[in-house]
Amino acid sequence: GPAGAAMGDVGPVGPPVGELGAAGLAVDGSEDAAGAAMVAEEPPAPPPLPGLRLVQQGAEAHVYRGLFLGRAAVAKLRVPKRYRHPALEERLSRRRMAQEARSLLRCRRAGIPAPVVYFVDYVTNSIFLEDIVDSVTVQDHIYSVQKSGNDTSGLHKLAEKMGELLARMHDEDIIHGDLTTANLLLRPPTEQLDLVLIDFGLSFISALPEDKGVDLYVLEKAFISTHPDTESMFQALLKSYAATSKKSGPVIKKLDEVRLRGRKRSMIG
Amino acid sequence: MERTHRLELFPDRSVTLLLFQHVKNAAALRKKAIEGSIDGALVNPTMIVDPFQILVAANKAVHLQKIGKMKTRTLNAEIIFSLSPSNNISDAFKKFGISDSDTAVLIVLVVDGDKTVNLADIASQVEGQQVSLDELPQLTDTAKVKKMYKVTPQEEKIGTLLDSVVCRMSTKDVL
Image 1 (cartoon, rainbow over the protein chains, first blue to last red):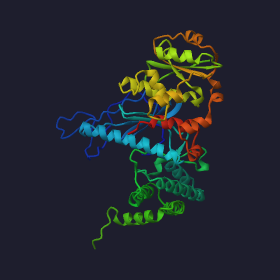
Image 2 (tube, each protein chain N blue to C red):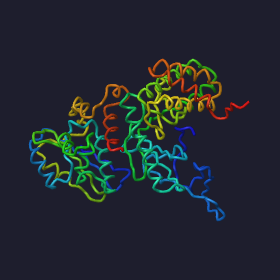
Image 3 (cartoon, each protein chain N blue to C red):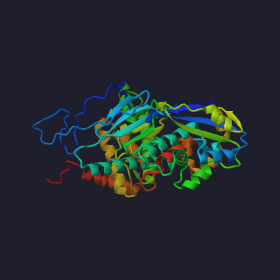
């Protein structure tokens, strides 16, 4: 869902959130005697930060904003999946946390804007990061620009900057793994198009053009499904990507191949 | 003058920072810290960019202490170790602890919520002048810090030196 939207103050922790597990089972908080595999998911307890606000209750993690050690921070608490074998769950959780932390450091060392890591807690599987205060997701920005009806040139410039940023990221062999317009933030003031990449929970390191191509494909699908009439915007993004990255040729080629492979594309007459 | 911060995640602990300049008895202080007559971490303030850096180190140290996973033997040693970007403990002490010839000292005290610490008592043991934490930036050796933490030029463009430092501290031991 869209990140960065404050959902108001957190009151007492409510009942477990009903969510769709990865196995496709509907997870219901209430007891169900007849239940086949109904498992209540235990939400993580909110961190005791001053000014705490729940930002997002995703399937993978609950995201909060608050003050940590005197700074505006984001706390991501992983949601344990009870249907998984505990050893697997622990390993997966740890690996995701580690990958996110590593990718964030790797990005920053390469000069790719991403939040600073403040604290990694392997016990509760939570990570405390820099909060980009008053930022707006690219998703929300595109919505509001399209709604107000003008400034399509601004969106073109934004697409160029996005392409440039992703090219630099891929040149460092960092695959984001979950590229959507909700995972790109714009620092205030929005007009400066100062982008920040977030949410590296599914990221990994790879030099393969295939992985980079898929990374872009994921973004393309997210773009088209979330933002109508943005084909030209994405084209501008790719053009800028190609111009910025020296290794872009094979990546774009793979992107084309993946597009052809895509879902619901039958080669059967 | 000193600054105290309660650790949000460990509300039974608070961290107090005291900064001293023109210190004449660094050697004696070091001994007292090792013996335990001063129950605090004695840090070299020239390696510290901002009090937040100390809080991040203290937070991590307390966390590791609570789960029994400290790399060093005491909380105070762990704080100094957490400041360092390296996994070598003696190297951490050499660079972030104080040496006998130092004239500036930053004392970090982690206190159990209820216990009152006699700050005046600690300050009286220092042959030097206590100054406000606001003076810290003047003591920081920025070039030395950049070198120690291996801050890249590209990185400097996207954030502050403190950002670079804290990021390395917190991800140092990530598998």
